[in-house]
Image (cartoon, rainbow, N blue to C red):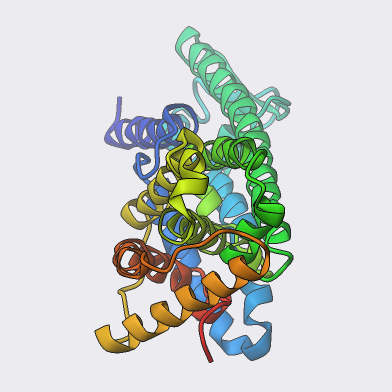
Amino acid sequence: MTLGQIIGAALMLLFLADIFLTVLYARAGAGLLAPYWSRAVWALLYGAAKLFGGRRGTVLSLAGPTIVVSLIGLWALGLTIGAALIIGPELGAAIRPSSGDASTDFVTALMVAGNSLSIVGSGDYSPHTAGTRVLFLINSLIGASVLSLVLSYLVQVYTALRERNALALSIHLMTDGTGDAARMLARLLPEGDSSHAVSELGNLARSLAATKEAHHFYPLLFYFRFEEPYYAVSRFSFVVLDLTTLLETALDRQRYGTLISSASATSLRQGALLLLQTLDRDFPSASDHGDDAAAEARRHTQSYVAAIDTLARSGVAVQTAGMERYLAARREWEPLTRHIAPTLGYTMNEIDERQPG
């Protein structure tokens, strides 16, 4: 083998390993090339979107599909170049056309490599030795396998995206379109009745767990951004965490003790935290530029007072002694949303619609 063929084989192995880790191993941040490529394309689009002013959100909403298409193109190009480096030295001898002179330039090598990797397999050039026939066979198997894997991966990604959006929309509608966790909690406890709340929270917890695992298995999901803020992971996670925090600190424990200590409430909170922690750990997130401590405490206090009022007016039995626990819990999980939301171009005013002022 020539040095070029060794480099070509190594290049094909590199891209096959990246496809394996991205599609089959399926763990956030596990790819060799895909994570860095996705971040680079996102950074490019994020910078370009600033030039569009009010249409910035529209441009960013193209990021997910663009990253998918460009990543598939990167894999295809990498495999083709690798195969061309292997095939190039064999052109005109072991690999030649059925008639006429054989071109031996690199463009011809790329064309022959692409044909050998495609399931169509058309082209004038064909192998004439046992070794090159085996090479063409391996290339065709690689091409067919990669194509089927990528198509299956795309189906899974878009299925997971639809399920994530369905969860986000469900939470948005349960807040009556306000993004207010207190309003959502009041609707879960109509006139103070908690008989169906545990099962409702359990359904949300299962959907949230599926969404968390989807982002772990299909990291590309992170880059699918929608113009409507209620589809944002940071938005519906914020609402869920605010909801569970209000459950623990604002409801009367004597009346709602079973609901507060239920596995559904606990798993819902933990699921939202795990989702935000996964995104914060495995994707480029922004630094926390929150308010100073005094302003933050004042804002959280006003949110708690407003939530207590919303719940009380809806016939829910409340307590007011949970203020300090509410503030402590908000300080624990709110920075996670502040890290993630700006990365995808959302402001905290879009994420926390109950912010005073």
